[in-house]
Amino acid sequence: MRAVRLVRVGEVELVNVPEPVPAAGELLVRVDAAGMCGSDRHLVSGDYPSVPPVILGHEFEGTVMAAGAGCSMAAGTRVTVDPNICCGSCRYCRIGLFSHCELLRAYGVDRDGGFAQYVSVAEAQAHELPAALAPHLGAFAEPLSCCLRAMDHAQVQPGHSVAVIGGGVIGQLLVQLARLAGATTVVLATRQRSRRELAESLGATASVDPSTGDTGKAITGPAASAPAGVDVAFEAAGAQGTLGDAVATVRPAGTVVVVGVAPQVMISQISPFDIFARELRIQGSHLNPLTHGRAAALLASGALQLAPLVTRVIDLADLSAALTSPPGDGEVKTLILPG
Image (cartoon, rainbow, N blue to C red):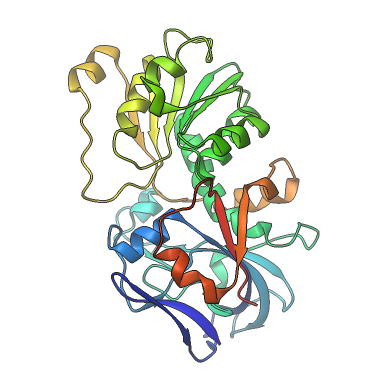
């Protein structure tokens, strides 16, 4: 079968490898669609830890083709796969902090993932999708599950004002989730005009270009109708300066949720006195513990607009070049169809 493998940091290649054979408790899944994530580029560049050589791809949906001993899911079942595998017995798992598992493993990071025609996955990681869901949209379950985790941290309430810093797929999903949660004001900040227009078409009440001046003032001005600052700000860009932008937008006693994946070596300068004096809550949001099943159900509900987020669809043969190139202007989500 064809697959795209991270050989070593900085080197990815299209390879032909044997089709996996599911062990006991595992499913053989034909990958119908996979999403390319910004963190995949970080894996290739070495800015996010991985264990190469490994087949990349942690956002994917597919169809069960065969099952190992002890499995109950039938062939033909459409599934989305939670890539993050916890041990269930370490000190963090025992208190429910599964994303901090001391033995955490993930498909597409240190186990072969979904940038392939077939992948073998633990049945416990598979969540059924309805056959009626539009083709390929199940690949959004993983980024959506991360956004649901961030929303849980943020505790957005009806009537809240929200800022989203970053216009990629995470930012665009957060705009929609914030509106579904009842936020009356949702402002997205990104430099790319096409992403700002997309966000407004998906429910953002306003958008701003942070390159034109002070992002905090732009968001908390007339566009946000919240001159004292917004209730919640999501940092969803992982870029230099965006955490400071998020902190600058929130009101006293407001909440900043950091969900963007920044390079490990990046350092952000924010004022401890400002955090102290305004009593800000800065919350990291890592991965998707216990939210992947909720994401699958939300996808099936049809409450989100997902098709407009698909910027392009490519074949596995084009993926190596995409992974080693910077994002194109306006890029939100690239889908890969391995078949």
